Amino acid sequence: MYYNYGYGGGGGWYTLWIILMVACFAFASWAQVSVSSNFKKYSRVMTRRGLTGAQAAQAVLRANGVTGVQFARISGNLTDNFNPRTNVISLSGSVCDVSSVAAVGVAAHEAGHAVQYAKGYAPIRLRNAIIPLCNFGSSLSWPMLLIGLVLGATSVMGLGVALYALATLFQVVTLPVEINASRRALQALEQEGLLTADELPMARKTLFAAAMTYVAALATSLVQLLRLVLIYLSNGGGHRRD
Image (tube, rainbow, N blue to C red; front, side, top):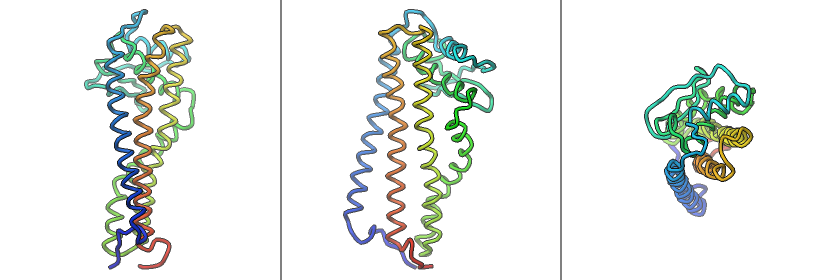
């Protein structure tokens, strides 16, 4: 049996990884707080046009010539989503029937996802296609790595690293999808006059904060992948030991 956690025998890599993980944790925490605070802040600002989140999302769809999308009200806070399989935009109670700037921004973002599918936006179709594979990789990556460590089987460890890389790929594809949905939403809100010139920056701040959570998730996944690669290499990865 052969396994080693020394990352090549030096503490430098381990120290670097700890620093990066702490930075990612701090960034992710800030992003979550920023989302909550911005949504709460701009939920108190009612739009001058009086549009609810659901009405704004419908307007975004109309502006892009998208039809056939259904709406549903769901429980929870910031649980809003678009399901491409059912073609349904689900909006939470704090968004669906609320006429705040935050509600309009979030609902328009979900409508942006519906527009992406309707327009054949390649990254979102790729993300949807790789979800099963990425979920498979995420669930089996650590067990495979641990089995490889215990048995001293670098090939099994390498498979675990590769499986985790699939999960990281999902984060890589998700980031541009989310940014693009927000861009489409803000563009429609401005062009259709759904928000005034002073309300648009508020919606933009809300969506930017949400985007930062995806940046944080990607950074954390990449740092974790780095850790797995270092474990693999320090235990003979690239050299035959099994």
